[in-house]
Length: 523
Image (tube, rainbow, N blue to C red; front, side, top):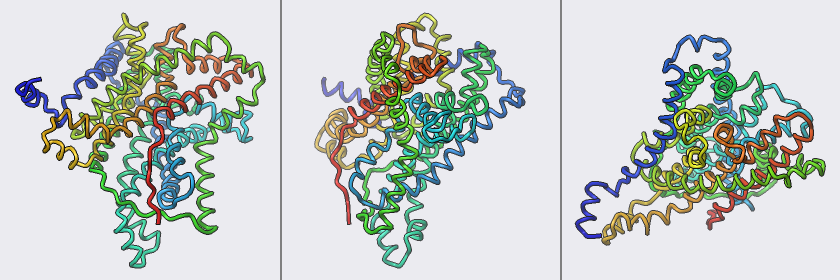
């Protein structure tokens, strides 16, 4: 390419800010979210009737959706902040591995998590407690997913506390509690607020977990939208509720984007020195933290595996059936194609969103809208493509690429500005700076985003209910079919298939996010 062409491209498409790269992902969002949702609203009459919210039944659904999301935020903060403080301040064997696998619950398919919670606290659960038809079942499921998210965010926040400031406070006689409240809390608070925004958004717009654990009384608005569309074909009320969910979700997403933009700065951390665990009080404190993590983050997964291992030998024959082999092949194929598309879109969106709070908020547009309405809207907007593989893969990628975009944005925020500037000073073009300097530094974060995207695609459930054809059977839809049939044999078959899905999500996560070299700072 000539020098003149490079100069012209830099004038028309300024590579230094990358904002022009948002055009493909924004077009994708328009085609996969904007137009389908608009078509659904059009078919429903394009009207939002205030009388809809005067219905006592829908008031309860909306109120419970808000309440369970807010209660989950409160419980995760109450449990997660002390756990994060311990993990951030003490060094012990296996700490790095624990922080790495801590996010595994977050990428588990909703069907696996739901069955795990039922295997613990449902009828005939291994715990002996039957919490079915109570609000605690859904709240526990929400904690399983979101407690690790808050802990990781809080640990990152504690790592940004300047070591010198904390040492000065302790030297001047401040107790641990006073040092936390006066020095650490102001630094950690924005990180907690950012995580709580995501947790509220995930719980408020979640579908699969609420469908399995909410029951008839404690179902959320997302489940109500699914019932209105799938069983009653009431597009007017479904579209109005989806629009209301979109508006509320947009407020939370914009708040999250503003907080993240405030936190965006090059990574110049000098975290406090972690202390080795010494003495029985500290050992007991660490043991208590590990037990809490095991109860909320590991117990449902272990319950699924235990119930599957205790199933009759006949239940394991489901793995040899033609439907299972077909579902396994389709799951792997669809997930791989969706991962490739999600990685491309997420990388472009993440690079473009650094300097724009609006673009940061739009990353979470797939989480703001009802996945049921998106899937049904796709059928209405593109009837000629409703039975095509391209539309199914695109819908999978839609729900997966925000994880890649978020990881890329966070990595770009942490990049030291001196390195790209030095490369530019030495004559490197913007593309060469990105390829040789920025991208290698962002690669670990990109792998993490891809790991979450891959696990999300493997366990995708809501879209598959609408867009999957019989020959496109996936593991999630097959498990749901078994759960919908009566008899203990079908339940055991669903548990066996859920254990396979669990292992697939685990492999997808670990295969991409392989271990990185870390250097612990200990006193």
